[in-house]
Amino acid sequence: MTVLVYSEEYRKHNDIYHPENQGRLKVIMDYIEKDDSLRDLDIVSPHPASKNDILKVHSQSHVNFIEDFCSKGGGNIDFDTYATPDTYQIAKISAGGAITASQIALENNQSTYSIGRPPGHHATSQRSMGFCIFNNIAIAIEYLREVYEIKKFMVLDCDVHYGNGTADIFYQDPDVLYISIHQDPRTIFPGRGFVEEMGSFKGEGFNLCMPMPSFSNNQDYIYILEKILKPVADQFQPDFHFMDIGFDGHANDPLSNTNLDDDFYPWITAQMNEIAQKTVLILEGGYDPETMGRCNMKVLNALNNHKENNDYNVDLSHVSDETKSLFKSIKDKFSPFFEF
Image 1 (tube, rainbow, N blue to C red):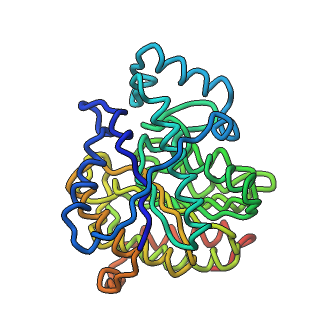
Image 2: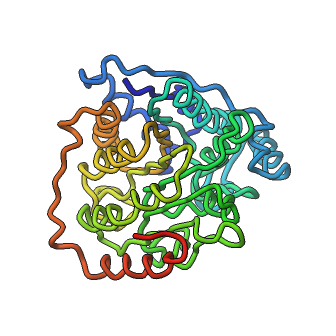
């Protein structure tokens, strides 16, 4: 049975007028309580990340700013990111959730899912942005490097927004393969994540962007992921696998123009299960509450290898010409690094 890492403390980081509010997790936990197939789900409380853990990724000035800003009551950090008096401590727990999930995955040799907030993949080493305070997945990677001496990591980010923070932190790192499938950055925050953003110096070729045309659907996503994901993973041979999972690419989500449906999320989870013996999932976005509840149930069942939830046959005969052209562009750009 999959282990879920979760804390009620996450609800203390809250602004009821903001799309990234505590109701996102409440609906997920409500669905879990009502689902008989998840009755035996093991729910584990995370240990907060230490300040030293966070400083492995973020600058001293950034961490000090968040701590001080929250101690003075919080407010708006920028135009779309808020903090409350509790946010500094809750963000440490959210980062700790990613670490705790990773430890359990290693020690129990099983997939785990950290359902935490605030999310993390937009946070850079120097600043909070895009609803994110600290970069949870980057903090977990640096922890695993130091404590477990793990060398090579693969991150699949399927949030509808490009994880600019994660990408920037590892942009020159050949031991972290960051793969992001997201909506065309010309049409959505953060305006980054083009095919040409491939990494630099020793990290060139290890930042792989799939900027999907607006209104792409399951067929488009599955077409390009089937051609890229497993071949790249097989050639890179990571020692540890993460998936940043966001549900904001769903057709019901108010913050995007992507047309995925409920079936995509268990499908991609099952793909990662096939690629890796164990995967750590880290929750990112998703802002339609009922969609969050339904889709998370399907993801948890897929993680538990409930085959009936993973069998999904999609007709790829109607993939858009734009998606096919995007694959060709990625194949051409990355030909020095990977064979597709």
